Length: 131
Image (cartoon, rainbow, N blue to C red; front, side, top):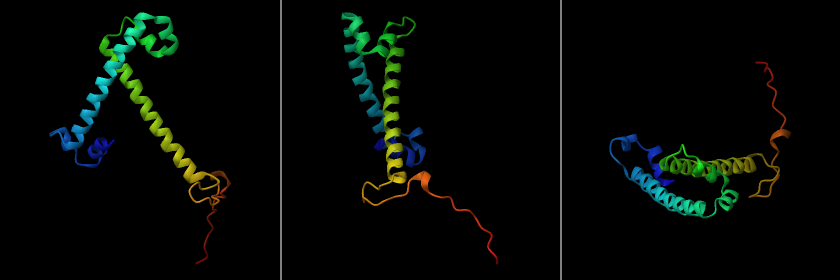
């Protein structure tokens, strides 16, 4: 995350010259790819040994691995995108939930004070001022 932050907040010189933030992102992607390749090798072995059991434990990967139209590279990319998409979704949902809890809950969890709920706040009606 630090590498991503560095590339988003600084000038985009990483497009021309690999900056420290870019190198950090590239290394994390290489590490993730290497771990994924090892995991896929284990999954392929499990798939070949007992495909019925594999189908029950990993239905998505079962369908991907048995699809003859997909190359090994396609399978790797699908697995990588699915996993990364899950990470992004979890991060987004956690951020959203924390935002809702801290901004719109009945009780502020940190201070214990009452906070009006989002839908119980009466909207202010603009009035004409007599000046």
